[in-house]
Amino acid sequence: MAAFREGRVVTVLERSDRIVRAEIEIGTDRVDAVGFPSMLGTLEPGDRVIANTTGLELHLGTGGVAFVLWNLDGPRSLEAGPGHIMKMRYTPWQTEVAAVEPPESIHHGDLAAATSVDGMPVVACGLHSQIAGAAAGIRERRPGAVIGYVMTDGGALPLAWSHLVRSLQQEGLIDFTCTVGHAFGGDLEAINIFSGIAAARIVGGADIAIVAMGPGLTGTATTLGFSGIEQGQVLDAANALNGRPVACLRVSFSDTRPRHRGISHHSVTALTIAAQTRATVAVPDLPAELSETLWGQLRSHGICDRHVIATAEGRPGMRLLEEKDVDADSMGRAMADAPEGVLAAAAAGVVAAEAISGEPG
Image 1 (cartoon, rainbow, N blue to C red):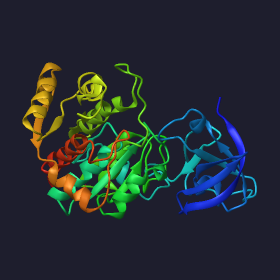
Image 2 (cartoon, rainbow, N blue to C red):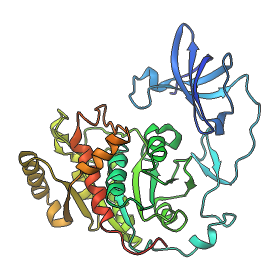
Image 3 (cartoon, rainbow, N blue to C red):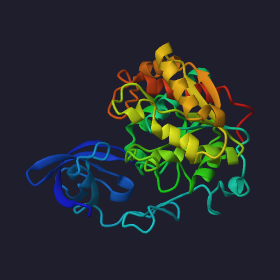
Image 4 (cartoon, rainbow, N blue to C red):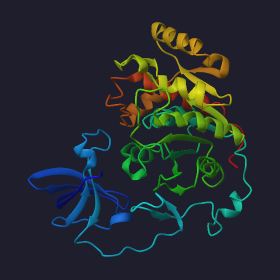
């Protein structure tokens, strides 16, 4: 059962129209808290609040903060949102959004009969952090490309929770965002992964879409029980829409867990069990010994037989992230401490950039 606690706002640390961060006092403890103004309204020092502290009490990583549900001293009602499509449906936190698909949307006519993205490359990632390397790889190879990030609901649902996305947009590495499923808060809102990819192309004018869940991968040390398995389904969706799917490998030589060393078992499962269609798998150029390990895994798991393999140099993309001071830390490791994962993502971006053909639909 979720844990709900009453507290008091001590200090507002950060605020924007999408997210507010504060320090709140609960009993004798002071904890970090986050709220979303579209659902909550404003927060001010001294306000009494109700917060969900479940993540704190379970000692979670990504979600280990208090989430403010209600400001007891704030506005009693908020203005209705701009649309009627509900996300987080039939929960106490359901919220309305202006999705791109329904008839009242100005984009309805463009999307009504859409079934193709006309060959647009779609980079499918298994981790949220990979979007940084993928975007940098694209931007370094094709500086003028329009890059859209499509965020699924496999991880965090509010896009505002991602500091990484804010950094990438501020630095011009991502041009717009689209949230699909029950994820919300993107520049565009869509109902599912198919319409989200189509919206990125047709509404956002993307040359390339990067698709990944929000922060907070769920894993269980089982073959099928992890949220990143959606990567295979994203690749299939891109193929179904006449796109060019590019798979980003989860690669690490810093992770001490054998199942994640080299190519993670998450990538293997997504590419051999979840994905039912053929995609291009991007492989980064690495030192000979590490590269030999990757190629051995690709062959032994049959990935070379099921998919097209393309190698690419990821270091220029990684250097671009360093120049922009964007640290694509992953699984608690800084970019400099686990470079192989960033290089793999940047390589996927390069492969996708080289696959651009024609103009956005």
